[in-house]
Image 1: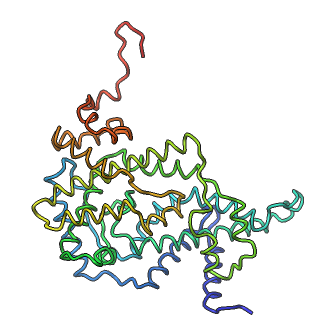
Image 2 (image 1 turned 60 degrees about the vertical axis):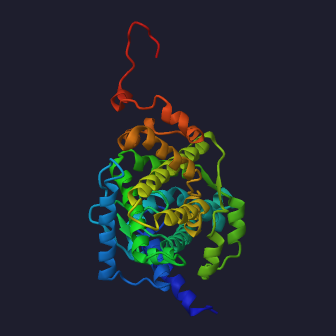
Image 3 (image 1 turned 30 degrees about the horizontal axis):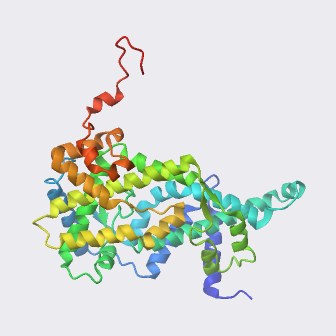
Length: 402
C-alpha cells in the first residue's frame, strides 16, 4: 500500500525537512533544497578533490592571473583560489541562488497553496480551513524546494567554475576538477592546456566582478527585476498537480520541471530589464574573451580552438541554461557575444588597453545595445569622458537650460 520503500523513505525525509523549516524563513526551505542538490550529485558520483588536483587548479589559476596582467589594466581578482567538488560548489553558491530564485519561488508557493486546496472555496470555508491552508503552503514550499534542489544538482554536474553563466556566484575564484573533466571529453588537447585556458576565463571574470564596483549589483539587479515580472500560469499548474501523488518524487519533479509554468509579463519594465541584462552579459563575455585571447596568444597553442568551443557552448546553451530558466524563468545567454568581442577589440586597437578598460569605470560609459550594431561609430565617438564629470551638477552660466 505504500509503494516503493525507497521513494517513501525519500518523501518522509523531505516531509521532515519541511516541518523543520524555521518560521519566517521564506517560501522555500533552502536547507532541504541544498540537501536534495547534494544528494543528486553524490548519486552520480562526486569524489572529494584530491590534493594533486587541488594543487594543479590553484597553480593554473595563479599562472592565469599572472598572464592576465599583460592583457588588462584591471588588477587581480584572485585571492585564495580553490578547487571544489560539486557538493562544495552547491554549498558555496547557494546564497546567490537564494537571492535570484526567491521571487519566483514565492509566486510558485502562493499559487500552489491555492491550487492544492483553497481555490474555489467560499470565504467562510477558507477561513475555517486556515490552519490547513498554512500546511498546504508548506507543502507547496516543499515541492518547489525539491524542484530547486533537483535543478541545482543538475547544474552542479555541468559547471566548470563559479562564472559559467556570466553571473558572480561566489567571491572566490574556483574550478571543479569534475567539471573540467566533463568539458574535456572528446577534445584532443593536452589536459594542462585545457585547465589553464579555463583558469584564464575564471580569473578574467573575477577581475571584473572584484574591481568594477557597480557590475555585480547591475547584473543581479537586472535578473531580480526580470524575475519580479514573472507570473505563474495558474491553469497549467492546477492541471499538472491535479491527482498528483505527493509520495512519488519523480512525479513531483516532472510536474514542476521546465519553465513552461513561468510566464513573463510583456511590460516595458520587463523588456528593459531583459535588454539591459542581455547587453551586459554580452559585454562581460566579450571582454573576457578578448583579454583571454590576448593573454593566451603565443603561450597556449590550443587557445583558438578552445575559445571556439567555449563560444559554441555559451551561444547554443545547454543543460545549465535550461536549469537557470527553471529557477528564475529566464534564459541566460549572451546572444551577441561575437559583436561585443569585436567592439572590445576595436576599442583596444583605437585607445589601447587602458582606454578600453577605462569604460568599466562607470555604467554610463558602457556601450549600449545599439552600439553593438555599429562598433566603429562608438569607438570613434566622443565617449572618452572624464568620469568625475558624470556626478557634477549642470552648470549655470546664465542660461537656465538643463
